[in-house]
Length: 113
Length: 113
DNA sequence: CCGCTATTCAACCAAATGGTTGACTCACGC
DNA sequence: GCGTGAGTCAACCATTTGGTTGAATAGCGG
Image 1: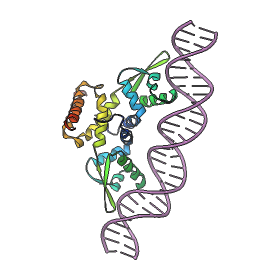
Image 2: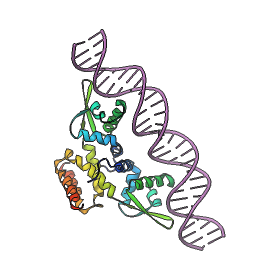
Image 3: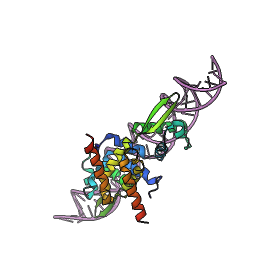
Image 4: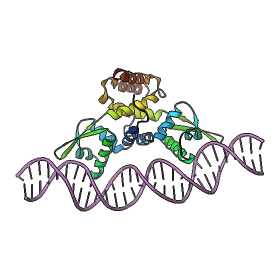
């Protein structure tokens, strides 16, 4: 079970609260990206984009492999799953049909110790 | 379909990034609360707590009914559903079993125009 | 070795955040 | 009408955030 006060949720949700970082995640969902590639769509300095990448990394949403002088970033979905699980608790409020999700996640937890 | 660049996602995820506000949401998930009641668990001034309540309200997560001198707050799950939908796009990365969620949400959209 | 490329680091800045306190508004009950 | 309770507002403060620029580190290709 995800610890609902997980201090990491702070970092994850904060990371997600910025449209630049959300767009970076979207790019990463299509595959590996270097820092420069992640920065490219935005009209900001590379240094600024690099800070966003670091924010994503601190939240555990991104891991990087340093190969030579380029940093290859890939999505780490784990923390997104935590966020999803946190939200799942409230899913019953907008539609009872999503109770299914909660059950699904619970099964998941029961399955692997 | 939820607009994935919804500027509201900024406010929603930002609201969720604070443990005080998450705890307030948890309290609200049990039923209506006044501002004072929401503030009670925290060792901060009422004014500070009131700001957190306003942050939740700005994110659309909470709506209040002013009855006399007390403000009665209740959870508005709509924006949580938007957040959930945003996350759902990434669900396939942590487990294919959750593809079900995406389909579920899509059905939802197709159902009501 | 040299120059270019990828990236971070450090210093700086303006604006936003999260907290405080004190004054204010307004409703309730005696 | 008066005191008290619920809540907001305004001013203030320290810290964080998100951006800048310029210098530093370090790998690649000639």
